[in-house]
Length: 209
Length: 404
Image (tube, rainbow over all chains, first blue to last red):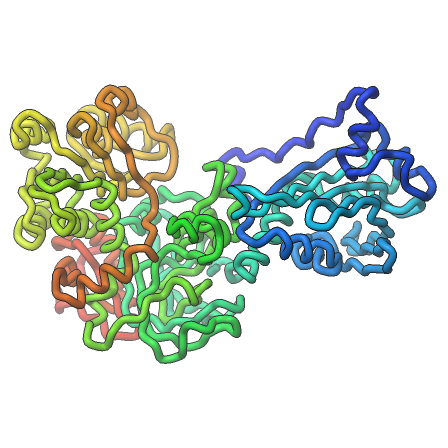
């Protein structure tokens, strides 16, 4: 596969641009989490790290032929996420909107952090951010909407994490790989396959595949 | 098990490889009783299809007996006899629901590779490169069939393997090519290429109401088949000027629809064909669209050009100006197999068509390397090779042993 890709001159996707005007900062934050800054509890360091649209943004969307309510319920049960997010080992719901995340880190070590849901409108949006003091600083939202006059469901994900520099950001950058947009897109594809077809397609390993 | 494996340009070998296993809940394992070499396998054999790897099991035309099914496959039972479509479809996505089965969203594990090339990925295919999923093909004793609760079609015991095997690809492909022509009663259809897909396109065009079909090739045995079995008028492009002849045969108007059943390795005797050959041999172009250019130029104003022939890359000197000036409709793509298989099985059962007429060679699996070469070189009047895994090498004594 690798040689074939090189042969076709396929380049890695570039990261999305990160510049957002300072004046738009509160709107940017709200855009990510669906929540106005300063309205939620807790120490502000995740917000500081990500304030003003700072950091890396990843936006991807996928459309699927499954009723919106079923897709939302699948996502809301956070333990389901490792079934299609390849970098996650485990997500545990701690109750009260809090959760514990374990991802694949450098040299097989686990990267762990706690997150909290800071915005939730059933069948519309789930927004979260990492808790202060975590290994990583990230925020994100998943939005659910209908398309094709209600026949299809669209899932749009917006993920933000701190620009490479500090240790938290480096760890998350490792977790998401060199090309976060590609990784998230493949995660969403697996989610769609799992929910639509009931399984993730695969061929046998090896040259005879 | 024994399987036909790809090892490079004009290099296929019969090897012992691991037996396939159930990997996903909707899978089935099929014991292959008959499998054919497709003209599109020759594109792989010729080195035109990217993302093939050494050792890949070839073959996408096959049928057999269900041996084992996955836990979520509630449709097939061991012992049932089925023919398997070459395109793999989940049955649940937008495209499957729209009957656009060969465009299934969920059956290609390597969809992102195809997306880099084409924007979006079509369905996974058996034995047709890693860009199309890396699935092992059916030129083998056994094959794993994903989403086997959607694709395989049960066939009645009253029909022989040879009568139903071509429901796996070439019969539906020829039929969709004709259907794409939107034939009206009285229409004349011209077909470039009298291989198996061309033959089925000719017969399907008649089934769909065409008044005349004009078939174009240069190999005498193929023209003879088009004339005697498929009842077409025939043109030998090595002897006549095709555009002039078609103009004359249609009273100066041109055929109402044209079918390119040749694809990316088109031959040809005109200047543009030699130009294509030079460019592809130097890797300056990927495809040789000579037949397609001619089909576009020959087609009447407002007509349809239907393209079942496979193209993979970038075409040079594509006469879009002619297509635009004449207001042509172009229709193409891999066959939406699942849409056509039941109705074509019905045609076979009623005796409207017996697809076995195209078979020229009946051999064992071990003869595959020799047969690929004979088919490529069009030696020994080779039109269609059917292989029986585990069966005896059924070739007539002596006549093909010298070919390499």
